[in-house]
Amino acid sequence: MDPVNIQSVQEALDGFLNKEVYVHLETTNGAYASHHNEKFFSAGAYMRNANITYERAKITGDGPYRVGLKIPFGWVYAEGITHYEIDAKGRLLLAGHDFDGKLAVALQISLTPFE
Amino acid sequence: MEKERQVLVVFPHPDDEAFGVSGTIASHVNMGTPVTYACLTLGEMGRNMGNPPFANRETLPSIRKYELKESARVLGIQDLRMLGYRDKTVEFEDQEKLAKQISDMIAELNPSLIITFYPGYSVHPDHDATGAAVVKAVEQLPVGQRPKLHCVAFSNNCVEELGEADIVHDVSAVADQKIDSIKAHQSQTQLMIEGMAEGLKQQDPEVLARINFERFWTYQF
Image 1 (tube, rainbow over the protein chains, first blue to last red):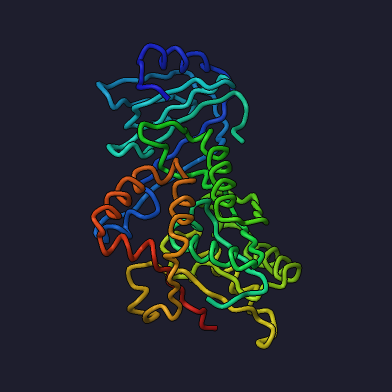
Image 2: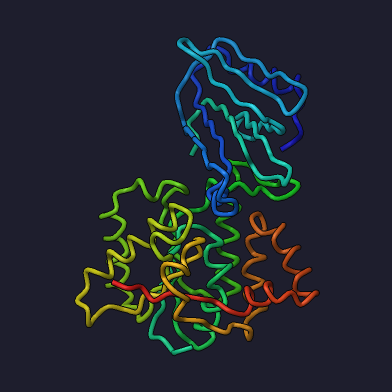
């Protein structure tokens, strides 16, 4: 993955406008967060292969970046995005890595379901 | 370490075998005991992507599959089975089905020793669910026919509630193989290995103890 280039990511986001896409959205602090620090409240969520169509998409911020996708009855949102990749299958992979390089957030968009 | 007829190791993630059990596995293999390692998932949801990141969410499974095979190779595991579950979802699967799969493996392999996680004391929900399924499978056997069940536990309350581990193996003779197994999981252990190498150099007693000794709790039915 490469550090976010706003223009490339925006172009990739726009490439999926008004198309039926599959989305992987995830936030995580890892399964060991509360084990290493009992005062830490562990929380996370992921959705894999949610099938949506968005009419508007934007990446913004000074880095780490925020991304919002406007869908017919709501929004998809991710913050903390640091890296991106358009992979060989044409999928847009966005990820936020923390200060140790560990994945903290991911938003991925594809025309076909993720395996 | 007692010589076993056959060892069956059941863990949910590639690298679960590396940290606390690889020395024990290597010792059994070196004694000529067949070891089967059933790994439930490919650790698809791991957070470590290498630093700087060389993996991403979608390439991680194939990278970790390769690392798992590499770890099995350095430990001399002949029978590595990947069961095809998905990371972080083991506890939501049909527990009967999982226990049945393990029962079938027990019937096929007739192990004298099974190694897994101690349910309730292993921190990650996948660890606890895996251990619980193994316990369920072993429990179904008549008491006299049950293989030994050695469990790894590391929750903060494990010693307080289970007492000290009743099995402690000195694996210093195979420490190199153990370190190679940990290193094989490069995407996950890069940072840790650096700390470990430094600890070894400084003869840090905590690091030495982690490498040279492996602890298990015999499951109490």
